[in-house]
Image 1 (tube, rainbow, N blue to C red):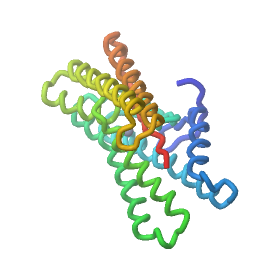
Image 2 (image 1 turned 90 degrees about the vertical axis):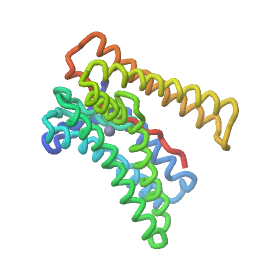
Image 3 (image 1 turned 180 degrees about the vertical axis):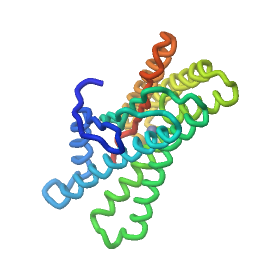
Image 4 (image 1 turned 45 degrees about the horizontal axis):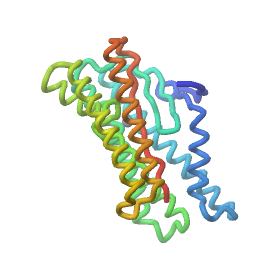
Length: 252
Ligand SMILES: [Zn+2]
């Protein structure tokens, strides 16, 4: 995972922070404050919003970990990095039901948090003034986090849900994982093709920048799916599998 530093333990799970996190933290904060750089007040709200988003990612990972642990999948540590988090399991789920619950817990948690911020925005937007934009952003980001991770490509949460369902119906763990990683690679290629189409055609008012993000996400999805597939082919111990998370940095 490269350079990380230790944040301490929560619920007996060690939390590590990847150094790339600082880069995204600064980028997110600056984009939130934009274009009111001169007002210190916006910087304060921007930093608090970035920290709340970080707390949302931690909650998503904790939801996976605590549901996993309750279903017999021990979690040793969680590394938080530029695109979310990675939970290191000491072993994979041994039953499809456990995998299904554990994989679904993260997106469910993000949807709840997104709904919570959405509700605050609807009820209080006239009272909280400039903070309303940030609360709305938190609602959108949490729903995006849930939606992105529900893409049915292994090893994203949606791919794990998909594998658990295949596993339940076929009873074949290896074949289910192969199909889920293949679908993950396919989804990655679709994103890349879609991104290139946006760069060239600019449909729906989308810019070349949106296209580049889509290509980047597609490349990311394809490479994590390929890595999982290679891992399976080498038949490495299953304990090195990880839950990968990702989200698209949302522009305002
Ligand atoms: Zn997740």
